Image 1 (spheres, each protein chain N blue to C red):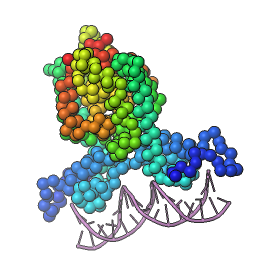
Image 2: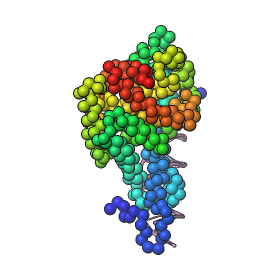
Image 3: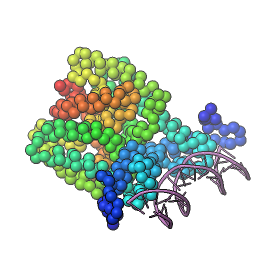
Image 4: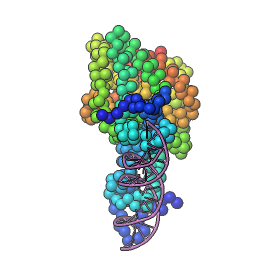
Length: 217
Length: 217
DNA sequence: GTCTATATTGTGATAGAC
DNA sequence: GTCTATCACAATATAGAC
């Protein structure tokens, strides 16, 4: 009832490779990622999509509705990416750390604005409502990864019993540099390639650091 | 020329304990911290300060000017806090890690909205211009702390030669949990006291983790 | 489906009385 | 210094022609 079509023409119009509906959504994604919901003007989106402002409301009804689609897609995208790795029955804990580090750093290098976007918008929007629409809890907490962690603690292979600390450390090491990038590049006088080079290095370094932390007492 | 006074009356008015000027600034701080610049309405600030909207412009000229005061004060506050610790000639590297962890976690527990506020606003506002008004570079990069780090690397006591990696790890461990708090509390089903308890634990844990990382090869 | 107006409300800022 | 009233424009959304 919300979407009357998925970009299919009714009659005489020939469709281009990318439908107008899709074009608007991708433009909205770009602007929302860059500026956040409150600072985004629907006119910015229309301009970015190279379409008329009225079309935005024709396809998506309102700025708010369009935004909800984007943020849910983004969250889902992020969860799916980690879900596959965390639930692989065939890999060890340490292999998973390696794979998560690599997968997420590559992912964020491709779309560097996502972490700040998500974290900023989670402040104002209701996280409870948003996350209830996604399998967040199962993906993370009931994953093979967390079960393996519990087992490793029992076997005395990991000192810290609370897996949340571990999760904070791993994700913090991966994500934190990206969200402080604007500040760090300025303060440390870092160029964009130099920053990216550092992130490439971290793909290999984080697993060794995490390994060291596991044994720390 | 910007501030015509600091809350001093010209003549007949008696001043209350907290001046109107100060009241507006603190209200602005609260609302900006909670919602960010773009989502904040000057009317919200006036209501929070329990004053008339016109007074905001009387004292601070514009929303933008008021915001700049707040964000600069906040950045400065954050830098000052770390500056003292990082430049203590009498403490070792490991002691500094301990002190930074404790000081910052306590600071953020008192004002939990600051990290997300700063990181969000640094995206839209020009970091270069903001940071040029503060001694950010000297505070961090030219600190005793970073000199000690360099020396420790020379002596083979630290495996990773790039201090930036070290800095990312330390600050990430401290700050990251706070910026993901809304999401984590929801996904992990954590109460506010339980979250705070975790952060208390991290004051002691982070230094042991960092020590382990230093030696990791 | 796409455009040009335009309605309508929101929002920063000021004028002017007290 | 503080208030009420209001201006001027920005911004979302819709009506209606094509």
